[in-house]
Image (cartoon, rainbow, N blue to C red):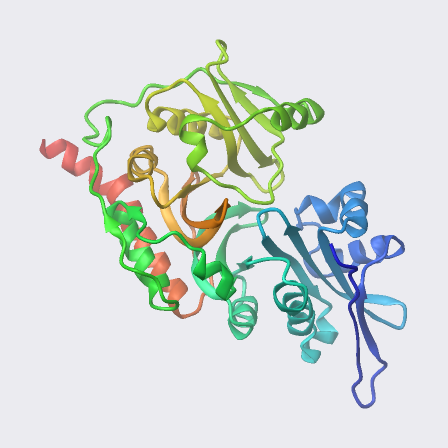
Length: 398
């Protein structure tokens, strides 16, 4: 990877200079103080809360960690994680001290790295970010940088209140040129695809109304007897030695290292997840199984993580496997986002769909979202009602 070097001095009349630069290990304590200043004790991203993970990220070539410094004080912070093999990047952790927000620090930091990794050095094909919905500013920031609105993560984190996040992505021409055409999606995903298609040039998808073993909802989905393994080093080591097979070849979860294994006593099914006990968040990363029904696996995963006090579980499935999409929906994982070009395999990039299941009462009272994100939310709520409420009346009529 080419040598990283980013520095910008912002000068404003009557104010001390603000220097934007790459973070150093010596900044760690001051960075944590900034997040504590803005979020109190509620910030839950491990790379910020765990000093050793923060140190590794600051020193790692596959991270750009920028800080804004004024008179020895860190007043802004932003992280970009890079996967150079898959040519993906994730921007996260943008935070600016209240008294410095009129300087557009977040925009400047985001753009400096975005230009460097997509144009100057050509390191990645796409960048994505998730934005909080406590106010409109993060959504407007990514919109102003050319990011496309891709969907929502409803009630994805539970800290003080349930938090809904938005998904947004920045695509280079290279990403779109290498995209695999004609995704094969179930009808319930089509509205999400259409919202994205209005923003960037995508072809028409193939709509496949496939039915699964449990699509009639007359037969209860049987549960696997999962045991949980949370020994961190064991999980990491086993994950590195495991190649996802069966249904799991069709899922994708970037920038997540698992810290949980769910395994059946006969070891026929082994599922790797990342979970965060603090904000009740979990995502499916990969696995192996001898099961014939993905619906059985997903329902079993959902029940087990719910028992472990998770409030949310998510899986991202490629957009060319309609039978697996149907099984996820039959297990009441509801689509909420469409992510073009997300997964790189060989010389092609594959679209993906975000499916999630929440175990708490949906709560959007504090959500502030702009324009198209409201359309994603409406489509999500429509499917949620169909699968959690109207389904009961349909079953009674039968």
